[in-house]
Image (cartoon, rainbow over all chains, first blue to last red; front, side, top):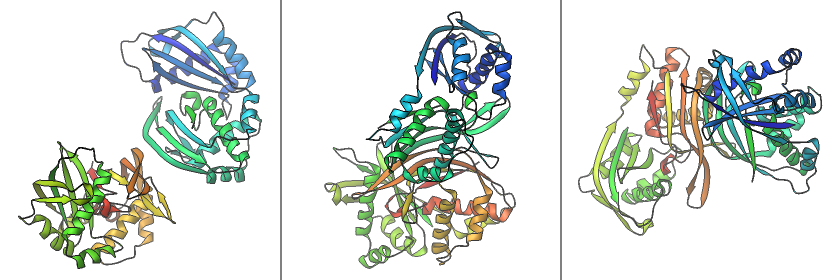
Length: 248
Length: 248
C-alpha cells in the first residue's frame, strides 16, 4: 500500500472547504486515469483507494492512499511521474494547482505481519477521525463511532482488498468488539456535502484499551494500521473517514 | 420546584475545580440541615434535590434545585433565611464563603401542565450537559447520552418525585426513544472524582427533533423542563448531570 501526499498551492478568491474540495479532487483524479480503469473503479464495492485533503501552512496537502497492487501501479505511476507538476480543477472555475512537493509512504504485507506476530502487543490506542466519518446500517447513516461498525468496516475493507474475500467472520468481530474498552473521547457531528446530499457524520478522537489474547490484540492493531490507508466507513474515496492511529 | 442560585465569593490560594468543590458544598448543605432530615435524605433512592456549581465573573454560583414540597420548605427556608449570609467549607481549609446574591426561580405543576396541554408542541431541542453526566446500566457506567438511558432516568426521577411512583412505563419509554432523531452533537468525556472514585462521564451538547403525536412530544418537553431542576443520570446531588434545555 502507498500513501502519496501531494502538496499544492491554490490561489482562490473565495474560501473553499476541504470537504467540498476533496470531491472536486476526486474528479481531477478520475480525469487523469485511463478511462477503462476509472470505469472499473466506479463499479467496485470496496474502492482500492481513499482520499483526504487538508490545509498546511497556506497550501493544501492532498493525500491519496492506494490500497492494492493495481492501484499502486496505475494511479501511483501517474501521480509520481515527473511530468505531473500541476493540474486544473475544472469544477472550481478552472483553478490552477501548482504541485510543490510529493511524498510517499509505504505499508507492506510484511509490515502488517510484523505487527500480527508481535509478542508484546500494543493495547492502548487513540483513533483520530480527521475527516467526517459515517457508517451505513439498515439504510440509515450512523454518525458516531459504534465499535461494531468501525471494526466491521475495517474487516470488510481489509478482507476485500488484502485477501480478496467479501465476507467477514462475525464471531471474530464479536470478540474484537467485546475486548475493547473506550476510556475517553471528544466527538462532534459534521455534515458532509456530496453534490447536494448532506451525509450526517462525525469527527474527533476516541481513546481505548484492548483486553484480549495476543492474536486478537495484534489483529486489532493490524486493522488500525490498515485504517490509516483505507479510511473507515462510507465514501472514503470522496474524502470521508480519514483516520490516524496513535499507539500509547 | 425551586431553583436557588447563591452567588458567593471564595478566596483561595489554590485553584479548586468545580467538580471537587460541589462535593464539599454538598457537605456544607448537609451540615445546615436538621440531622433527622439529612439522615432521611441519605436513604432516598431518588434524592429530592440536585446541586451544581460554576464560575461567574470571578465568583462562584451554587445552584440548589429543590424537587419536592418538603425539600423546598426545609432546605429553601434555611438557604433563603436573611441570617444565612456566609458559610465555611471545613473540608477546604475552613474557607470562608461570603454570599453576595440569592436568586430564586420556580417551576410549578401548573407550569408543567401548561406545557403538557400545548396545542402547538415544541419539537426541536438542544440539551446542554453542563456538568459531567453518567448513567448506570447493569453495574457499569455508560458515559455517552444513550437516549433510552437519558429518558429512563428522567421518567424515574419524575415519577418518584412528582407522582410518588417508583415504576415507569417501558412501552411509553420505547415510544419516546423511537420518536427522537439526533441531528447533531458535540460531546466529550470527563471523569468525575468523588472522594477517591473516578466516575466516567461526559459533557457537551445534543441537538434533536421529535416526530410524534402531541401527547408524546409535549411529555418529552415536560421531562426536559423537569430535567433543568432534577438533573439527569447518577449522583445529581453531588453535582453530576446538570443540564439546560433550549427550545428551538
